[in-house]
Length: 209
Image (cartoon, rainbow, N blue to C red; front, side, top):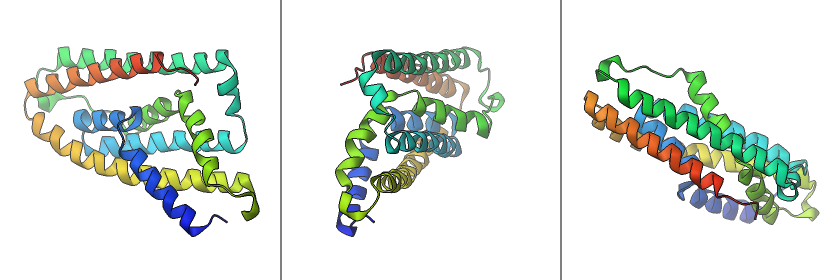
């Protein structure tokens, strides 16, 4: 079992990391502004499902593949880039075709959830980050390292849900205010398009180290 003091420090560090600007919280911010508060929360649940995958990968030691194999890292990275560019294109199309805010097409819960999963899983840096971050809070004398890593990963996910839900609420309020007209909706979709392209470029420039 993990020491209580260590757990408190871990939660504090995880909270700070969740609030720090990064691809995931920027993605949630964008979804919340363009599609509403509930969209941000559904996307968050998708992202955290992806974090479950990364936690399992780290606990089983598979994440070392992404650190040592250029091919595996590159393939997964460019899958993520392709998906972000696809979202950018969809946002651009939406900005060109919205005649009225009240006719806005809505995304289903599954589509939003799926976006979060794909966005998170196709970023190999998450596994590498977990591989570097989580073991710092483990102690071989306190039992199975695998169990400790899984527990820490779950704690990180709970913190992420709390922080990203707050981001979703705040961003959703801003988005609702901005999207009271067709023009505002077009602007939001253009901004979303720019954000997705920026995240894609950032992912392209991401290296293994």
